[in-house]
Length: 196
Image 1: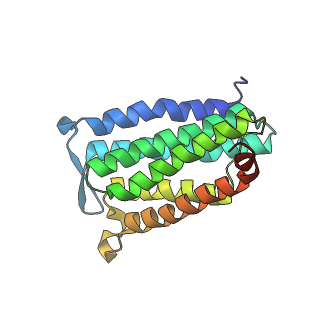
Image 2: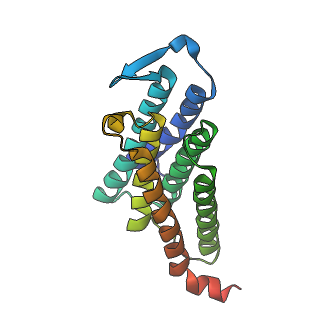
């Protein structure tokens, strides 16, 4: 495994996940609350959102750096998508527990992620290349991350005009979650057909 800068950024994202969990798993009442745009938000949610944003930015950076400097590796393709899934699924589980996201939506997202991960494993076992993320998958990842940020902050940025931006992005990401998942299986149809 090559420890180039994109791979280091991916590992940083994975390391930030336990920090994100610790901030949300405990009440941290001593941290108090903070007013953000006239909305009282628990400080641990604000800090967790900052950690999530930093982790999400490493996702944007590692791919661009890898492509620009020809540092794309099979490890990077695999670990980058794994880190994304770990971060996003962790956030969604907390959002369900906080009653900020419908469980059925998160269940579909989790099932899709597990199915695509299994598909990538089958493709590799058959001697194929690691399936890199396509545009629908990238849109899915981006809309998931935007939805999570707004949901964690209780849609505060748009509460003044009563637009539930977090929920809007959540359902947009649900559409791309289903579409991109179907697209991965369509791309791998020949491998699946030859191994059934």
